[in-house]
Image (cartoon, rainbow, N blue to C red; front, side, top):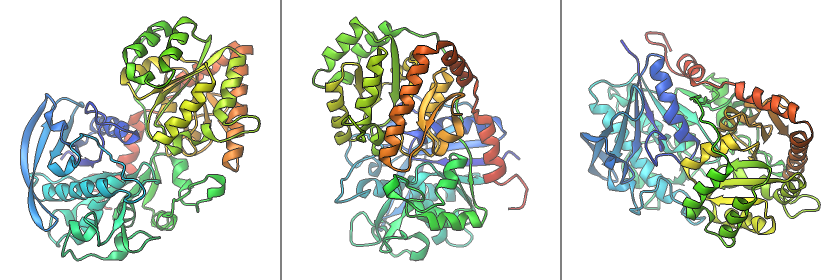
Length: 512
């Protein structure tokens, strides 16, 4: 009998517009790899008020969901031919689009962190639980991804004996420990007891270790799931340690005791994410790329942006550095950390780049305050082209055309950008943490830096980038050999899928 798995996640990069971060990449690429390994895979995400309108979507079934003291109907749609040998489903319900804007995630500010998102993902867990009970063929394993899906573990703990959910094996992937989903047990419209009134639960199973009057979606999964993994072996070790905020080290982000207990129970492992390796097209050349940027006018919709693009189109730097990623604290802070002689590390890097006729293209958006800080740097440096937004049609041409990739992450559970850059033959300058340390070989396929504080890390980032630029200018044959070694590295999903099957999923017929 073919074993089966349900993937439960907030994102799915196989759906156009269904990806925000690394979770979407994994959910697009891991299921087909599992299918090739002999598994039947079903991927389930919310519809967010729009994905059920995909041209391939067909109504599959209704499910009755017990939630917030009542019974609510949710509709399931099957999206055909989005991923080879993978069944793609979305669940539609008004709770998944509370602001009617089709967004996957919402920011609520410091006054109500996770308030909007926790409610919709609590309903998501309840909907998947209800679907399991009426599924014609229950899966062998349900695979939960990140905090958004973690509450299903709490629902299993409360499920009546003999139910399908109570007998279902649950495994859980930690993509980013910094986001956990913390809400009060009571006293708010967005609280556990409002979502599941009258439920009998053990607070110790699902509470936040620091705020015991709050439920923590991720902590519930860490305590209650049968198997856990992170997305790189190094990150699996890092999260067992206590945080050290003075050094910029997040460690277990307050959940380290739970993670150490899971490690002691042999429930925790690190499995490196993979990367797809299709044939890459030839470089478009910078003239064509900048023409394409001009077509996406919103990318340079900042004071001086149009003029900066015009300058680059008239005289593109001889060498181009690249950075692509979300503009959030984790992935941007090292760029903006002050270093000696410069307001920020990015200012210093751009000054070094100007000395060798190099410029930096950065593609990304995210937190407004960080975007504004990057725009201030852009105003000081004509060799910085900041493309404020994201355009899938631009990312691959940029990876192929640029010379050196900069990855300013403070921490990185796995990272995909460095794999995509290496795939295109582009060495990477990165912090020696998490999945970056597991994928980049210092001095062989890229350049790694270290430091015991954010200031030391930023200084090392600048110095290491300067060394890479010097190699690019003065020792081109040596740099080209590094490019070729980077392009030859393979982090294929077949190996990752095998690790999931053997280390996290039950073997068919094998004892657990």
